[in-house]
Amino acid sequence: MDKYNLVDDPPPPYGAVPTANVPPPIGLAGIQVRPIVNFGPINQHCVCPNCHADIMTTVTIRPNFRTHALAAFLCIFCCPCMCVPYLVDSCQNIDHHCPSCNAYLGTYS
Ligand SMILES: [Zn+2]
View 1 (cartoon, rainbow, N blue to C red):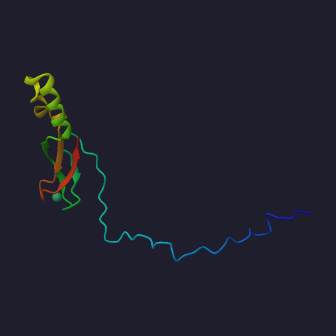
View 2 (spheres, protein in one colour):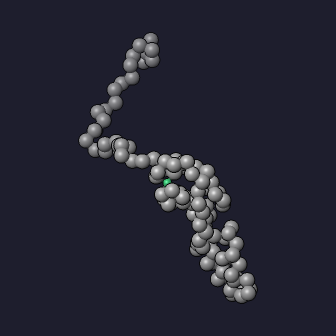
View 3 (cartoon, protein in one colour):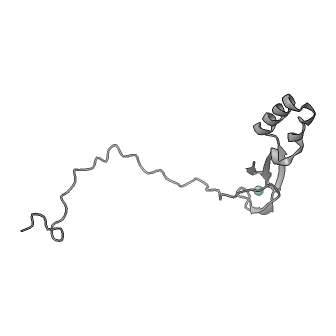
């Protein structure tokens, strides 16, 4: 005879699970979930999560750490070329904003 009949016998109960130390679940009420949009280097069509308008984003180009580091590198080894990273858009961050409410939407870097 089998000592354990897997079909008829329920598994032995586990020890009581302590519930006092379990943190309460984090509620999602009140948290506005923004859709994840991967922005590109040019203006992009999307719905603004702030004003919910159907918009074409406006872009602003600003230098980032990589721009300054590349300019410093070029200053040391090729001084006349040090301004090139500030003239090339692909060396800088491109911020997308809503034209209606001017909310920041994302960055392409
Ligand atoms: Zn907006």
